[in-house]
Image (cartoon, rainbow, N blue to C red):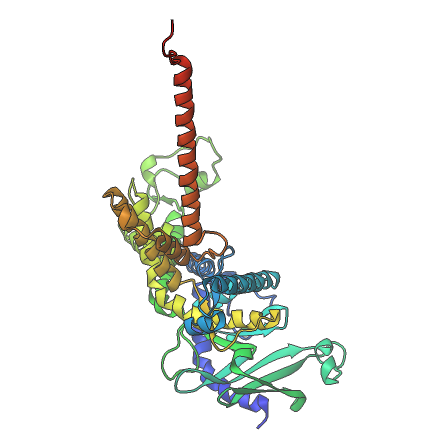
Amino acid sequence: MSIKERYEKLATIRKDYEDRAESNSELTIPAIFTDEAFTGKDSLVDKEVQSLGGMGVKALASKLVMSLMPPEGRFFRIRPHSGAMNELTGGDNNAKAQAISIMSQGEEDVLAEITKQDIQTKFFTLMQYLAITGNMLVEKLPKEGLRLHSLRNYVVKRNSRGKAIEIIFVEKVVNSDLVDFGIELAEDEEAELYTRVYLEEKDRWIQEQEVNGDIVGDEKTFNSKKLPYNPVVWELLPNEDYGRSYVDDLRPDLMQYQNCIKMLIEGSIAASKTVYMVNPLGQTKKKDLSEAANLDIIDGREEDVTTPKTNKNYDFQQISQLIQDYRMSLGKAFLDTGSARRDAERVTAEEIQMMIRELETVLAGTFTHFATNLLEPIVQWIIDEVGIEVGDGTDINIVVGADALAKSRETEKTLQYVNILHSLKYNDYVNEGEVVTRLANSIGINQVNLVLTPEQVKQKRTASAQALQAQQAGMAGMASAGQNVMNPQQPQGGQ
């Protein structure tokens, strides 16, 4: 069986997910996942009835990018296990500090490379696709960032644990793409390049490629950490090869909201239509009325002319209320704090903060999923390209999303507890060094060479105390000398 035939066989399983993704796209951002017959010349305007879904997806994607891959600050740590650290440094604190400093510099190099390859921009697009379609194949191009393959262009097969064991994707190629394969096409001709990777053994992936039914290029092998392909999903249900999207759960509300908007628009247009009815038995003539210009004077009676009334004001109010309810509900679902805020004259800052924390907690599981299945592979790819050696005893710890939310709570609780002790004048119970360490860890700051060690703090305080004592002694001596000048002793036996 050729790679193309294998692709077409697996594509039959994908069809239902494509249809669902296309429907979701029409309710949110039509350009994300169009039908197969769509071309760039076609218009998407006729599919757009409301823009709330699209704005909601963009707001959600933006919040996810800012939470998972913030433009400022580190979203990961390269840290060895405690046992490996002790073995590496022999338990020496200074050696540990130096090791952490070296790893922190490596983290800076990785972050600089992520910025250089403009991965954040692709990440925003990826979040939109995942929220709407639930699936995306992420390819890491060597030193060139990420390439995204839509659900229509790849198939995947997973094992019973949900791990991918086979991936095939197709792409349109031209002559310049086939130079390495020794293939030359006619001018303006395109070909389909099929790439298949499959798990042969526990940690050995094989890649092969095909053009026009012929295998091209050399066979390549990868281990799982270096495999440059990652079929990412929003949510993977048991025994499914493809993921479900966030919009899947919101489809009923989005469809009803769209129907309400459509009814209100059509009803308003119908109600705003102006038609005059003239009593055929009255004195007013239709011709005089229709031909009269502004400020003209004609013969007639006001009672002869009326306009039809729809008497739909109450119905329009009901639909308007439904629209507001759906708008607030969908605003909450998309983490749009502006739409989710209650309608009141005074909304306190604390209320807003509580609401934001509550909404962010809703996606805590999504944060954890993306941290493990998306961010960690991206960081691993960049680490390999930068050339940082990460041993078996070292982990890549993602410190955003759910973990960041937990650390934020920890910071707040630590400060609250210390302030309570301070207000009760229980300062002697506070271990200041431990407080400094916990706060640095909770907000993700490298404190090496930033804060003093306990020994350095002790020496600094001792030196300050000695300097203060010397200053006080000097001032006391000066005061005594001044007193002697003002009150000189009388010589004994003086005259």
